[in-house]
Image 1 (cartoon, helix red, strand yellow):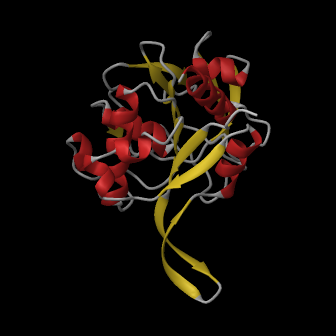
Image 2 (cartoon, rainbow, N blue to C red):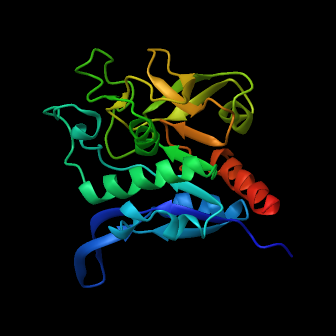
Length: 243
C-alpha cells in the first residue's frame, strides 16, 4: 500500500476553551481536516513557529502539499497600506510564517491551496494588494451578509474554463459559501485570475505557469461534497509518486 500524501495545514493562533482551560492554542477546524482525510491524505497541523520564517524548509521537506485556511485579516503594512478602520487585528506571527511558507512552497512547486484568507496570503506573498473593506469600496454586503455562519452568504462565481479550480468543481459556474470583507485588489506577480463574482470581486487565483497553486476566496470546507481540497490531495499524491 502506498504512503498517503502528507498535507500540512497552517493552524490559527487563537484563544480557545476546553475542559477547565482557556488559553492560546494552535487550531484548525475539523472540516478542513476531514476533507483531507476523506481524500486519502494525512493532515499535519503546522503551528505558527518563528523558526519557520527563516527556515520554511524545516517543515516543507516533510510535506507533499500545503493548505492555508481562513482567519483574520493580514496586516495592511504587509502590502504597503495603512490599516482600514474596519480591519481586524492582525496576528503578526501567523502572517510571518504563512508568507514565508507560501514563497518557499511556490519555488519548489509544492501543491498549494489557499482558502479565503489563504488566497489573500498567496496574493500578498506575490506582491499583490488587498481591498481592505468591500462595503466601503462600494461592493456592498454580498460577500458577508451574516457573520459567524456560511448559510445565507452564498453567491455565484464564474470560473475560467480549463483552470484547475474549474476542473475541481467540474463546472464553470458555482454557488459558493462566502464569509469575507476583504479581497484581492492588485493581482500579484505570476498569478492569474480564474474566478470572479458577479460584482467583479476576484474569487480564484492560480499560478500563471500552470503549476498547482490555487487560491479561492470562498469556503469549500463546509460542503462535504466539494472536491476542491480533494484536488489538492490528488496533486500532492501525484507529486509524492513522482518523487
